[in-house]
Image (cartoon, rainbow, N blue to C red; front, side):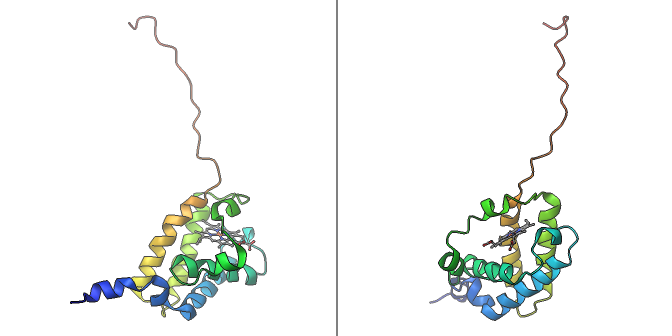
Length: 147
Ligand code: HEM
């Protein structure tokens, strides 16, 4: 007997979300990015091309047509983000925009929204390019009395 759960899980996240809802999400996302004081200054004024590339990327990432690869080649996501100074505040701001965009896209159900957010929140910290915090270290010589 076919398990309903198995049938459900066999459908990709892309199939369950659908291209129209994914497109709506990307539009909501960049509207928020453009208004975010932390990350807006990193982006070009006109976000049309950026949104198209993000849609293409998310299509493939969620198991749909690999549009990004077809149109632009390998995404080299980390390398592409290296020119920007991205630390924890920028990652948090990006994810905050994505969270708000998902909330603003009711066409995406809660299960799919949770799944997509979990996927993106695992990728986002990989974009960090600023060096980790360093601490001043004072080296102390061992005491003469120590063995
Ligand atoms: C962690 C915080 C992030 C920040 C601050 C950030 C910022 C940026 C910026 C400034 C650009 C260049 C936009 C342009 O010139 O058009 C960009 C491009 C892009 N980002 Fe991010 N990003 C972040 C995380 C992510 C994540 C998690 C993903 C994966 C879903 C992603 C996917 C992309 C894609 C696909 C592009 C377009 C690359 C291209 O030029 O072809 N970014 N991002």
